[in-house]
Each structure stands twice: as structure tokens, then as C-alpha cells.
Image (cartoon, rainbow, N blue to C red; front, side, top):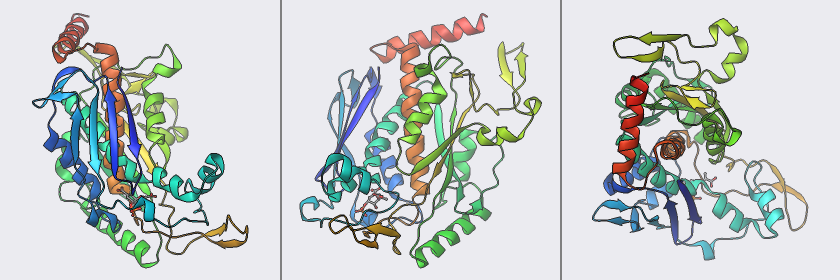
Length: 375
Ligand code: EPS
């Protein structure tokens, strides 16, 4: 079973992750993982921190001569902005952040709460997710992400984009958007937020192509693939809503326009759908179509013009504290979302075809594909 854990504080000395359940024989391309970490640092609307950091992980164990051994894999990232012991205590919790609840629940000040709740932790999620992407690529599964909305600006996106098209069309976009028209308006909206000392959220889409029929299951709630994606997606900082396929828009349509009719290609000997409103998942199980996940991020809760709060020492009404932060993290968020989904897909893939080595998994996978082809 694939499992991982992260540790580290935003301004601590390190961030780290430990991943258990990666089979032996996977080529671990560290340049690819570190390339993804650089992407995470980019995107229009980021704050000053990313000018200080050059996020890169080193491998602590579980990889020998660039190949996984089956042992737990450790990642370590050194924070350049290591100053946690000198950071001031805060007393006025920011509405929307973990400050208030964390401070009360753990009976401690706000500082240790925000240091751990910070979205900086997502650097490790990207490292782990990128490792999973390398694993999935071995089986022809590709994961892509793109931003579809920032604040009020929506991109015009058609439903049948392939992961490859998304990758090609968003290249060079500072907001990871495939639609050039919307991109300009999104950047203008972020500029406006910056000028007015405010922040903006948005939505992004993650698309997984090449997934075979049969990941996840309908038989037990914990095994449902859509439920697992939603749980992990919601665990990402700032995410407030998750949709699969047509998602919330299905509330508006008749059943006849909501489902994907079933066809059979007699030459390829495969079932297929002409539409993908289900987002690649029916009955909690992948149906062979692209898995399409859309996530909504709220605006970042650190505001230059702070909202009303309470001084936790005096209990007087005061404005919330302010610290350096981002104005909009949706472009970075889309990559983080893709990383998180990659972990869930890799975990479900290992569950179905699992083995201790890549050789064993490949054999199981190919045997299953032959079984499907033979009806
Ligand atoms: C982040 C690092 C943080 C924030 C941001 C994400 O760095 P600092 O607090 O030093 O500016 O920029 O975190 C948040 C938005 C948050 O709410 O904590 C990063 O590396 O992604």
C-alpha cells in the first residue's frame, strides 16, 4: 500500500517526506521531480518568498543508483528562509486560516500553527506526487493540470481536451491557462488584487489520461476512487470544493443529458463513451475515460487590508495580523492538485496490480489488459 507523510514548518530548517510502498525497479528521475518543484514556485501572483527559495529535494534513502529499491523513500528540502525561532508571535488570528482553531485546539500560540498549516508544505506533496507521476508514466498514464478560473475570469474550455493538448497549450502561460484571452484578464485581475492589497482564488482542472477500467471499486465506501480523490483534494490548503466530471452542473440537467452512453469498438475490442460527464469514474471505479477533477481554491486568507479579528491576549476587537504571503496561488495550486491526484491514482493502481517490483506489476497489468481484450 502506498503511504506518505510530510514533516516540516514553513520557516523551519527543512521540509521532508517519507513514502512507503514504492516498488523496486522504478527509475527515479530527480531532475524531473525538481523541475516540478520549480514549477510550483512559479505563477503570476506569488509573493516574495519564492525569490528566496530554490526548492530542490535530495533523496535520503530507498533509491540506489537512481532506481527505487522497494524500501521507504525519503525526500529532504532545505529552507533558505530558515528563521522560525526568530519569527514574532501573532495574537490576532486571520479569518480563514488555521490560526484560531489551531491555537485553541493545541493550547499554544499562533506561530507554530501557521508554520505548519502554511501552503509551503505543498512542496513535499509535489515531490511525492511527481514520484507517483513517474510511476504512472511507466504504464502510459499522464496527469495534466490547467487553471480555468481566477476570481471572476473564466477560461473557455472545451470538454474533450487531451492531457497532451493541455500541456502544449498552456506552455509559457504565467497562470497555467490554455486560453490566451482569459490569461490576460486573469493577470489583470491579480494585478487589481495586488493593488488593492487583496487576494484571489479560482478553479483548476486536473486530467488523467490512460487510466485502465477498474481502479477503485463500488463495493466499499473507502475504496471508491472519486471519494478518495475528493478526500485528498480537500486536504490541500485553500481547497473548498471538488468536482468530478460535470460536477455541480449536473444539478441543472436531465438524466438523458447527464450520463455517457456506452458503445463498443469491435475492431479495438473495447467499450467506450462519446461523452465524459462522469469524469472517468462510474460507481467509484475508473471507466477508461480521462479522469477529470476540478478543484476550487478560496482566496488566500492573509490580507494586506486585514479583516476583523480579536486580540487573543486582551480579547479586544482588532484587525487580523498580516505577514508576507501570496496574492493568488491558483496557478501553483493547479500543479499541487495534479500531484495530489497522482498519488491517489498511483495508490489505486498499486492496489489493483500491486507487486514488489516494477516487473511484477507490469506482468499483472499486462495480464489484466489481455483479460479485458478477451472479454
Ligand atoms: C509558500 C510559502 C509561504 C507563503 C505561502 C506559500 O511563505 P512565507 O509565509 O514565508 O511568505 O508564501 O503560504 C501561504 C499562502 C499560507 O497561507 O501560509 C510556498 O512556498 O508555497
